[in-house]
Length: 359
Image (cartoon, rainbow, N blue to C red; front, side):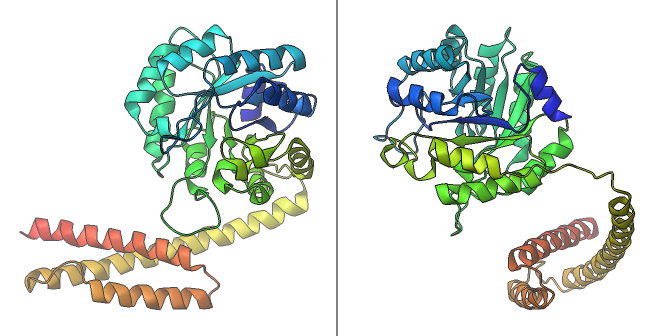
């Protein structure tokens, strides 16, 4: 179990793994008051940003080295472990000097393999727990690659943080949850602990509890949540930070899910339903195979007549029709669009491959 792995790293492991604290360390008083409010409430480590990479210059970019001293004092006075984000080798060196208990690599850094490698090189010879946030784009290869670079540097206590991905679409969240990305990470790296950062997914405090519960439903190992004693006056990301009381209320309301139940009624019923799903999936794949056979014949005809592989007008007709049909089957528009896009891309690929062979 991944939670047992986290426990072996030296964290309490009494339940949901919890990292909490302000987006940015702003003052010694702020850090200490947050730590004291969180201590003894199941929090595994106090998080606070020391160096804050901002999208545009002129915003608050962190207090720098003196903030590490504030975290160190908070650890001494509360017993909480402490951690922060590192984005370059000098950050790593400073954190190691202050003997921080955990580090994480941020989304902007994960996006750049050169930066990740520089951090990995700076961490050689240590084995501090390091979490890696997913990149800002939905590129699981970059995420896994960053984890592998750290592993290649000799680090063995590695975890992942899902914080959503950037999107140009209008939506209620700051970042798209993109749950399929961490689900795929769990499949490919089953022994890497995975926690969720609902603060950055949501961008709004009132949405955090629902996303946190979704993460629990999807078998995440824990959460990293931004908590501030006075969110409205925070120097960074004010809208997405909870007060300590709000944080505790959210944690108390969370329901942890298990992967399987030992109830015989559940097991028998679930087994029959899974057989139904397996049979239906087989039928779907058979139909898709037949569809591709038709598509290849269409491609042959297009090639003979020197007609383009892509037919934009026909494609628009297909999308409009399938979305309408999907709505009648209680399928969401987003799902139908993604499904048809994948089918269309494969159809184009097959037609192009046949055209090259034929040429």
